[in-house]
Amino acid sequence: MATLENFLDAAAAAVNANDGATLARLLDVNLADAARAVEGAIASDAGLNLGAQCASKIRAPYDEIFAHHCQCLAAKAENRGDDAFVSCKATTEAFVKDYRTCDTAWAIDALVRFVKNARELADVADAEAVAAKKKPERLHDAGALLMLVYRNSSNTSVKEKKRASLFLVVMLFKIYFKLNTLHLCKNLINAVNLPTFPPFEGFPKSQRVTYSYYVGRLAVFDDDFEKAETHLTYAFEKCPRTHLKNKTLTLKYLVPVKLALGKLPTKALLEKYGLDEFVEIADALRQGNVRKLNDALAKFQVVFIMQGTFLVLERLRELAIRTLFVKVHAYCAAKYPAKANQVSLALFLRALHWLGCDEMDLDEVECVVANLIMRKRIKGYVSHEKRVVVLSKVSPFPPWC
Image: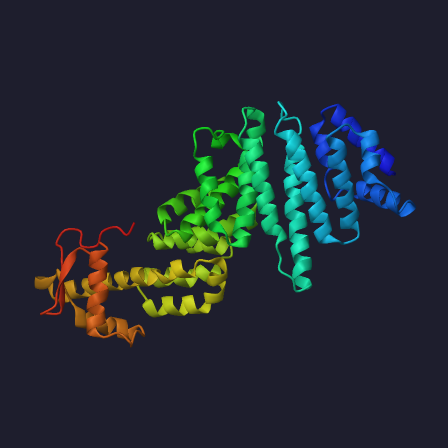
């Protein structure tokens, strides 16, 4: 593929033969041979009409598609990121216009390639905009473009065209998460759950894992920890063992979710995946050591904020406090067997002060315990007059989750 003519001949052959795999390869913006062919042609003829060249070789509408693609390659080679994205957008729109009326899915690989091109070039264009102190907008445009592609490939009676549906959903998730427009993900999840959507297990494992990972993260933000646990566990278990980085990334959200549900990870698991930031937190929860928990959260606060899990982990103080209360109850039951179901709030306050919670007073401790009772973490009632907690004689500490 040394010349533009060779490149266009190869493109014409792929189109005429309905060779989707070759077409997708030729439409890759990172295909070095194609970039050199376009560069060389433009260098030898500055007034070259790419549209006319493509029309002379390739049947419509692919002549227009490749004309825009050649312009994209030229812009990319000259480091004009924004122009490259604009041309890529035009290429994709021209392709979708024909693809939606096609009664086969022979070009589905090319559709997937356009989506990858758009995402990559949008990132490049936005990086250029930031460097030039301008507002980055191309990733947002890429999201709108991908939604156009999604609608035209999913709303069809041609079942084969729907093979790319989950891939497009995943790509849109990645864009929406980066743009922090998470509310846009909800409609996509609803679409995946429709009976008209292809069977989930029929999609490639990589797409299923990535989809579950993002749905799990969304559930974390919605405080739906049981749903988050289900999807993140699926993503972790289905992710191949060799993909250590992805399994670790999933655990960074799955571990906080399990902690919030009262399920403590083993030290061996945390060490295996290098999740040192959770070791002290898990130890603190086992011990009911509120001070140690506070110190661990403060130590790794920046990490957890960057991951978006800090607010989830902050809630673990309630679990640590309940664990401490259980230990104080055990002490009271051993020392005063006749009143085994009663816990002095003053004694509980002393335990909290010993752990560094000096700012708390008896009234606040009473409120904390009352809140635990209201949330059904403890079964019993508070006697304000006697300043004691009277626990149920049957299962006073229900399972956390």
